[in-house]
Amino acid sequence: MNQPAFSIFDEVAILADQFEGSYPHEIIAWAAHRFGAGLAMATGFGPEGIVILHILCQVSPQTTIFYLDTDLFFPETYRLRDKLEALFGVKFLRISTGQSLEQQSGQHGVDLWERDPNHCCRLRKVEPLRAFLKTRQAWITAIRRGQTNQRAQAHAIEWDSANGLVKVNPLVTWSQEQVWTYIDLYELPVNELHHKGYPSIGCAPCTRPVAEGADPRSGRWVGHKKVECGIHLKDEQ
Image 1: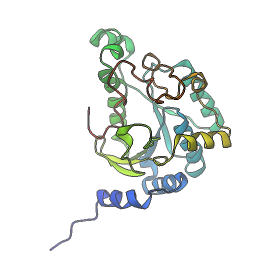
Image 2 (image 1 turned 30 degrees about the vertical axis):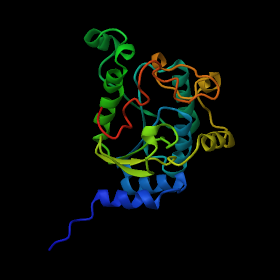
Image 3 (image 1 turned 135 degrees about the vertical axis):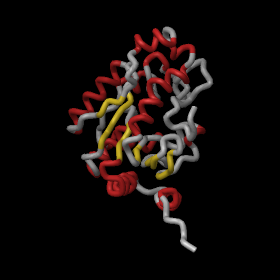
């Protein structure tokens, strides 16, 4: 009887254990070697993403780095993007929906993010991401287990069933303290809003400052039972 071929699922299952606790440099180097041009890194310009960007530019500077532009970022976020491009000598690939904010308002009503943030996130982040990832074999993200309950079971290497490719999470076991220690050690720039009470930064209409010591993500989608935009959920929203 013929034995079934060794699949990408088998490889991911083995690597999930093999890379548990590995240095981010090792995880990123493996991904760059394994997937080559089929690999891309996603960034929202948060501290974790900046750490990975710093490592990626050392290990695999040719890897595509993209961001999901909702057209609703804070001005400070766009300024940080420009600063990072100049610092690292890279050009971020902008991924966005083909629908302008005006067109969205005309079709779904004004300020959709206030009435139905899940639908707004799907239109402006989830769907553009999935369309882009169809062109890739693997993507690097900056999620950590300590960020949300939904991310607590994440692995350094895992299969992304929602998008149909391998997901690489180099900082999955890191603490928030480790991230900021790295930022300080290498004197890397961060979003100005982090120093104004915004530990987690998303779109301007859906992000608020939080009290000192509060859950870092408690300022996201205030007033809604929502802690994720949807791009890191295991299954489709």
